[in-house]
Length: 445
Image (cartoon, rainbow, N blue to C red; front, side, top):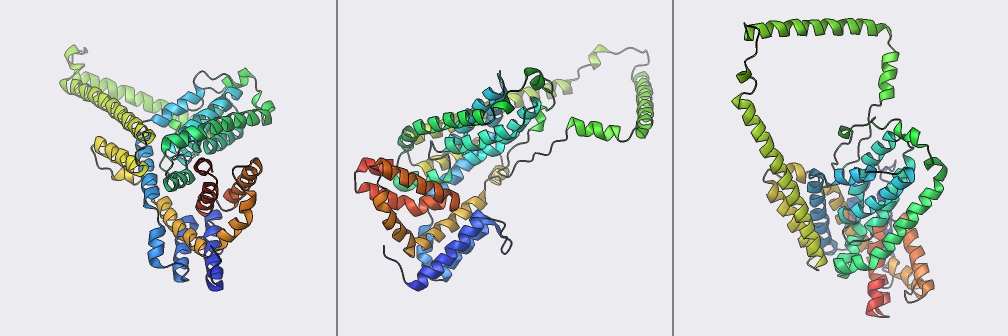
């Protein structure tokens, strides 16, 4: 594709530059409107500058990708309610053999969970479990948080639902879920293993702590300290035991007064309890028939019934999720499979779905809409095609040198322009170039 008119090239580049700046730096001082509004602004400017027409802008929005994103987010919400991530978090500390073993577990668990539940969800939820375990074992948290972040990104590459750029690649290329998984899984496993090894070598001295130091604070943090995921940044504000002691020690004059008040309150409760007991039982004895009332039996029965209902509901959530993965492996339409699974969970829950649906990141869906339009407008300027024509002879996927050049370009662009825009700008061109060689090379590309 040749370059468009100078008018379109200049104005289209300005619109894309604004989108890029707000997507990469959401809090730009001159225009701190955030990523989502920035993508909409870029899309609107593309239409206002007449780089693309309104009809072309609507056609640029990829509904199958949005449907797949929405479906996987809803399924993740219900899986969180069914405590799947709590069980994954417990795997991190179950029979752990030290800090280096914990690094390897975090790399493996975060890679697997991000492959099937998206990397964002895995990072937000598992971060609190990692911080909890690090506090319990008196370990510095940053090596484990780096293991979580890096392995979640590596692991998410294994499936089309692991991250947004994979969604774009799988939906637009029509590569099946199973084929995608089989071809990328070996590279993912190697990447996770190498990542764990590098982290252990980097932090070898820091992770080589004595066992006695690890066990000294094993009971600092309780299970209730881990808050649930709400598709928003996790809250890490926990009050430590040391802060509580500092507060007590800072006010020694108040201790005696508080202790006296506390003792008086105990005496009053004992006296009032004796009076109440004498009123209820004049003879000073307790009637055994009054220990358990029919109301208490009814409450216990309802509690057991509710407990088993909750167990069955969790089992149904897991079965629906497994069914969704099986359907994806069978090659069924990915978008409608995810949407069907999400609606099945809504129906099984048998209550108002609004609280769960409110946890879906609609701002991400809107961001994608604006990004589709902005990238399509930038493609219309002809700049991406011109740059690719210059690079293509050195980026053929049938040569080792070509694969290396393509890999370096993708790595640089994905860090500078973000992952999804890079895929949208290069994906079609890379596939077309490889298709000229053979069909197998196209799929590999």
